[in-house]
Each structure stands twice: as structure tokens, then as C-alpha cells.
Image 1 (cartoon, chains in turn yellow, purple):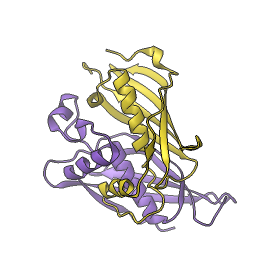
Image 2: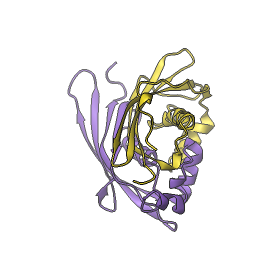
Image 3: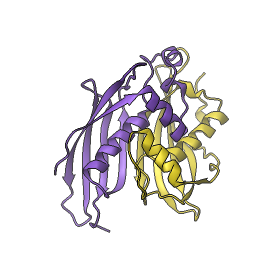
Image 4: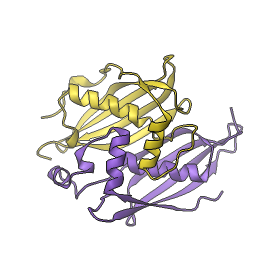
Length: 133
Length: 132
């Protein structure tokens, strides 16, 4: 079933505040074979926040995660993320179109810190593979 | 500017670890049956996994540089076999802006088995000690 077109422009509730820890950044870095010895989190780390927001969005719209593939991803950073940051992400559905039985869902997520300051703007295109596609 | 090509090996065990660390538990990255049921050729790496490898290469080439922006399209899947692993190669070309902003654009080429897997992967960096 196609995703509801009225979603475009909808802003979803901010995710629960997430405290970045040394241990979690180390786990994230180690998962891609790297070593972390303190300092800023790697460039793709904000996906942890953006993914949390995306999961909530998919759940709210009853979209199956296993039918989603990632089309593209962009990050624009205001500053590096460091352990101790308390972050939330707010997702907006920016575009929606149907191609060949798939929904192409454009999303943006703004990651903000405990003071409400913007840390990172992310955008992601999610390809929702239709059951018949 | 020297940006020697970096080669990374990706295994299914890596994807399980990454799923835990990133929160992305999409089964297409762990379960062959689910992956093929939605038309994929097999278990595929998280696009964000491949993007993280590209970021690792950039941080190897430019240690300490602040990343201003980073983006790519996910144009072809990285299919990860049940046994052993698959190699992902990251090459890069850096172009300093030549301006007072101290920005450098790194255009990447990320391939698996000779095929590009990321579309227009590009990072913009502010090198340590330069710019604002």
C-alpha cells in the first residue's frame, strides 16, 4: 500500500534525549574496524540519532523496516559531536513520490543539543519497496 | 595531497556489531531470507556502514580535520557473503578551495568488486588550524 501523501511536511515529535558516551562512540567506531581514543565522534555518528527518529516515524506510519533501503544520506555539521552531548533528533517528511511501485520518502532530521542548538542537519532518502515491486 | 586507497573487509559479523552500535536492526543486513524476499541479491551491508568506511578513509588522510559536510547516494548494494568477507575500496581526490575558509573538498570513489557502490560521495573538510 502506498505511503499516505499527506505526510509531506509533517514534523514528528523529537526523539528522547540521548547522552553520547565514550563507550558508545568506541562501540560505533569498533563496529567499522576502527579505534577510538577520545575526541569527536566520527562523521557518520549522527545517524544514531537520525535512525532513532526514523524508527519512530516508520512505527507511527506502520511501515515495515525490512522493506526500506537507504537511497542517499547527507550530513551538514554545525560542530563535531563529543561524548557528554545530550542530543535529540526531529524528523520532517520533506518529499514523497512513487516510482515503479516503490515509495521514495525524503526526510530531514535536525539534531540539536541540550541547549536546543543545532548540531547537525541530516537528510535521507528512504526507498520503501512495495510488496509487488 | 596524498590519499592512498584504503581497503576494508566487511563480514556479516561486522554488520551484526554495526546493527547493535547504530540501532539499525533492519534484517536485510543480517538475514539472507528476508533480504532475498524483498528482491535483494543477499545480505547487504548497511549503506551507513559503507559510508562509515569512507569516513574512516577521510580521517586517515586528514587526521584532526573537522568535517563540514558529508553525503552520498547508495547506488549499488555491498553484498556480504555468509563466509569470509567482501572488500570495499575507498579512493579519494582532495581539492583545497584555495580560499581563506581553509575548506578542502574530498571527492571519493568507493567500489566493491570493481563496481561503484556510492554515488558522488563527497566530504568537505576544514583542516585543523585553518579557517574559522
